[in-house]
Image 1: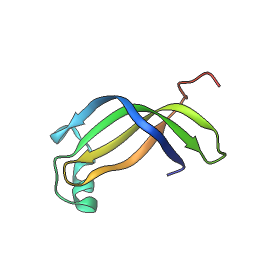
Image 2: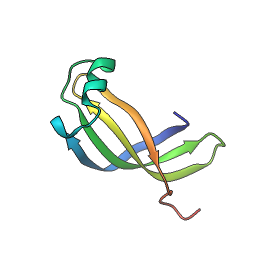
Image 3: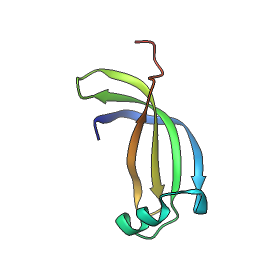
Image 4: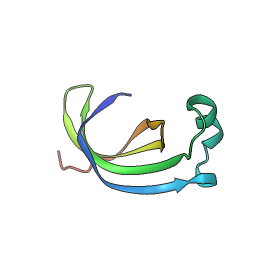
Amino acid sequence: MDFEIVGEIIRIELIASGSGVRDRTRLRRQYGQGRWRKLKGVARVRLVDGAIRLAEIHWYEAHGIGRREFKLKLPFLDVS
């Protein structure tokens, strides 16, 4: 991961669940059996250069396994 989430994730929305998660087979093989969902939300992130920006992030999660594979989506949401 080339960023760190600072604070909480807000405006969380479900993108896909169940058979709608394209990487479901890989996720099960890599992290274990679970009800995988793909979600998105907004959070402040600290970049490698130390800058803190507001960004949309996507990730996968499953009950009992937790959140995995955060992805930063560009462009940033703040006006810096």
